[in-house]
Amino acid sequence: MTKTRTAAASSIAAAGLLLTLAACSTPAGNSPSSSAPASSAASSASASAASTSAGPCAGVKVIVDSGALKQSTAATSTCVSVDGPTVASDVLSKADVKIEGTAKYPTSFACRVNGVPAPDFDIKHKGGTTREACDDKNTVSYWALWVKPAAGTWAYAQEGLDSLKLNPGESLELLYTVDNEPAAPAS
Image 1 (tube, rainbow, N blue to C red):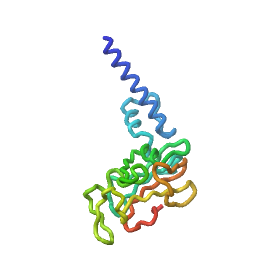
Image 2 (tube, rainbow, N blue to C red):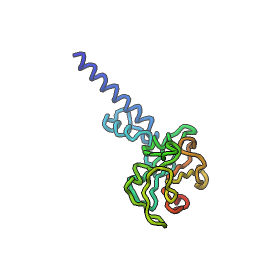
Image 3 (cartoon, helix red, strand yellow):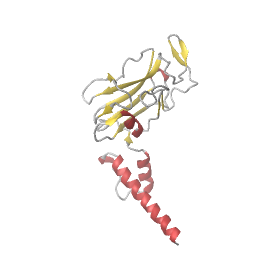
């Protein structure tokens, strides 16, 4: 009987935690009501702190564009809730964007984003093809890091993912660049 009560209490506590997390991670207009079933709260919570955004983003807008690679598994466009200056690597983590660094700079640069480009993927460039080994020797293709202020234009990031701080209203884009193309994000 005690095990049953403990299990029931744990289930109730977990459901309450999911409802609390869901309320914190969704914009106010989309917050689940207190009578929302646990299953919808669980799906809201599993979206972590990120939410897809078609309109303006009050947090940091995160965009991942694989460019000429055309790898949809890397593609992301989401709004991440932040309260103040937040390190880019933390913003990407909240957006559920998986980063693999390079051998020399494991936390500063992105070698692979959401597994793209795969180690066995042939990247076509002006001189032929290459494969990304994440060994800091690939100079023809890479994930470029771009930042856009709330009321500004895109600028190439001057810091790495582990030191660049983003503020609410800014945008962050990881854009795969081959032979320096595209030269900047589209919008």
